[in-house]
Image 1 (cartoon, rainbow, N blue to C red):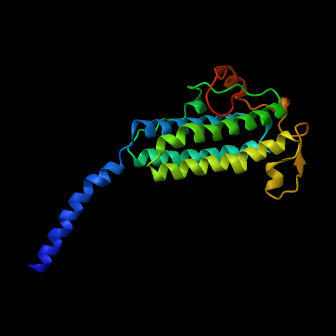
Image 2 (cartoon, helix red, strand yellow):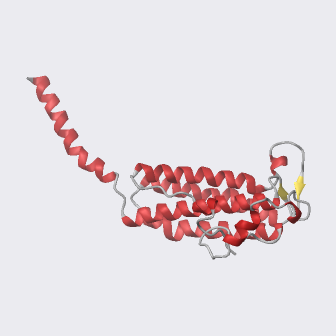
Length: 212
């Protein structure tokens, strides 16, 4: 009888806990919109930096940052799946969504990166983080992505804009050394095959990183 009573008490406690657990799986409209906006920004950044790799070559900081954006998107996708929200495809990669125009020079691309990361930080501070108060898991990921922009991506683009840009090769220890906007691998004569098509599709103004 004592064991039965204990089991019954456990069962009752579990039943009482179920509504609370279910509630944690429900997003407010504001939190859901914030997650989708963050994912859209990462999608656009990933595609935009991929286009810059096509335009200016893989031996540029855009390669590492493009890969970082893909990992950031994975974190946001995991949160959307956790809360049962349908995950959209990245329409910027296949051209179904317009990509921001590609800057005409490498120096312009670095300057665009600076502005884009500053805008990204402001987006999290002023819009997205306030909309997910009460969701510790989302707040933790948003804060991590904002910190990456603050401490990694923005300083990288600022250094490149100042002419002190480390190539992917030099970062990996190959001894390629530093580059400037004048000597970076992948000049305008080395465009990727799909770049002109991206530029035609990307004339519309896009919110998020990559806009002037």
